[in-house]
Image (cartoon, rainbow, N blue to C red):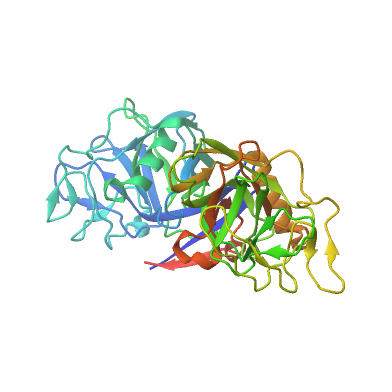
Length: 443
């Protein structure tokens, strides 16, 4: 049988997108009170709740189950509403309660539509009955269905029309079943069983008109993407602006022993992130490869948003933690130039790079090698969001180390270093437009 789930999308004012899915029942049935022959209505177009006008064996209870597998794994359930449609009742206003079932049950081919449905039809193997969860196979642990005595939701019904259940307990059921699908046995709908003639007839999933519907609002988990830098370089302080390290395996930051500064540059290609992505977190990881032997101090590293495009040529610096710069090649970034050229170099507005003075992120580093992490900040999120919207604004970040203490320089892995290259991690939520017109799963 084909089950169709339709998802619509609602933009949330929070930092993520909330999605809403309409899920049809995957099975339903009616428990028909009987002391003799087993009765059911597995394939009928109605299910029944409450007491009929019969003198005995008049209780009817509805069973409903919904397949939640269309909701993306890792989602958080925000709210759930059950919708069922009454098409016949003379009971007046009655309270209905919804209880989570504690035992699985069956829906087979029994069909009492010819007689109106309410009296039931002989149960077929696998049908749920008053005594059996699966007729001729597995008995209920309790007659009339094995369920949680505490109602998940309560609502009033009166005559015909839409009846809705919505309560924290119902939402909790859906979250629990989503987290543990093996525990999803659905609900039992119970009416007023204290007096007679309180029954309602509801459309079942086999009914083409307004079958049961579960409306679930959920927050999907964020997409997590890790990117390595696509270009990086080091600005070596130099009055001539003619040294660089475009193709080297290290970046440098901080002040060397002679009092001259090093600043790193790095840029990431974020074009794989959808333009309608809602960024929730941005972190940056750098790997310290060298520290000054015997004189290393704790320090602070800063990421500043770069304001001008810059180059990465073929220069390769040598040396240890402080780095001995190489002669700049064409298109290398240097202390004075965004793009170095022997005849027509393009200058920075400010020597040492053009960047926003306020850092987008700050972190501490110690006296040993290893990873340093820039935690997510509003500024990092804003930087990446801007780049996603307009790639022409993406000039990356300038890395500033300890520019106060001479000799407290650090070398960092560059994109050429492989496993120790800079890493940008982005978490985001986005509308998945393939679901805009619904999707189908076959069962």
